[in-house]
Image 1 (tube, rainbow, N blue to C red):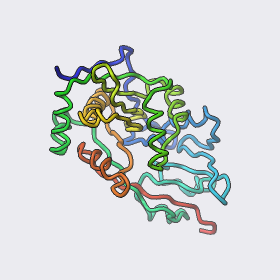
Image 2 (tube, one colour):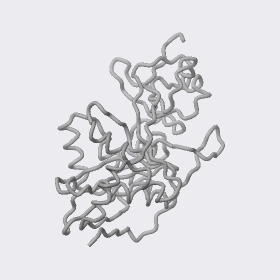
Image 3 (tube, helix red, strand yellow):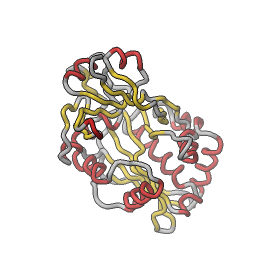
Length: 291
């Protein structure tokens, strides 16, 4: 018996691929979660001071600097950095690797860039399958032949085993992740934005992933598995189902997150073997007085 795939029966809204740039609506080739309307709405629902929603700039307390304007994975439009600086932007994690532009606006780099893995969801399912690394493809085939049931649900912010496990793992491995309260706020303030894909074996939940939808992009946000789930390569199966579902909903990019070959080498291999491309972000920049 092969895998079974059950979807939630309620229709899900297709992607809204519009992005506002200088007052005009344009088709955004990529929209990071941190610069999405869903992320801004969740921050404001939690009472986080947000000084701008396009780009998303929040007021964050950073050590001796006190409360300052901070943008993560943005700003996406770099032609008005001087204006944004006058309006209070002091630190940003750049989405694009454009050091000359940032220096010209009086910013200096304080943290070097990281890399992320991105899957393109254009083309056919056959194209995406062919893009997998042979080892990843073989693991997917074994997962497809296992007795697993895959279930997709729209997450409404309620408790789920994936989050308790993810919180415990982040403390154990000492890495930072978004708190469950923020993820739940995204799910509740922007309906249909959060999908959970679950894998079951003999009626027991053995693995799950959370995917957040925002504009033309979707983000692989949280993952959890049991030892049995690892043995049967449940995450390969869940990622495969998620990519096809997202493509059907109109998404063009699947952001698999930061690739850290030093501290999370096995996860980095898993992400890159999906066929995702490695992309360098722009590092963290701070406004320097007088420049």
